[in-house]
Length: 77
Image (cartoon, rainbow, N blue to C red; front, side, top):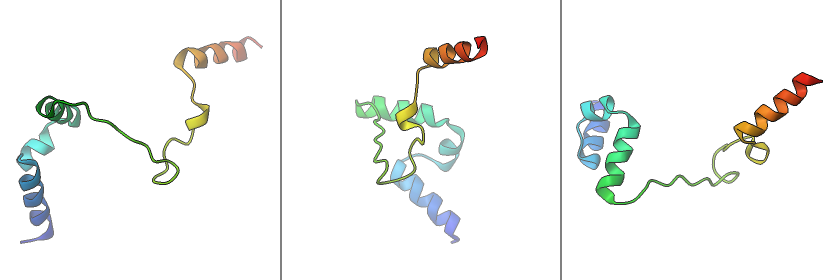
């Protein structure tokens, strides 16, 4: 057995889903299914800067409305 087959068999065994299902079903649909089955919402936790890059604009993020406001102010000058 090649490594890909071993990996695919392990995925099928651990998820209880076929490789074809995992490939053809959007991740959002798989997440919804898991949330309904498990009775809880999926949470995404950030451990930035300890793990991963995270959002490089973390402390400078603004809402869409704020960005539009700043854009219009810049264009008017």
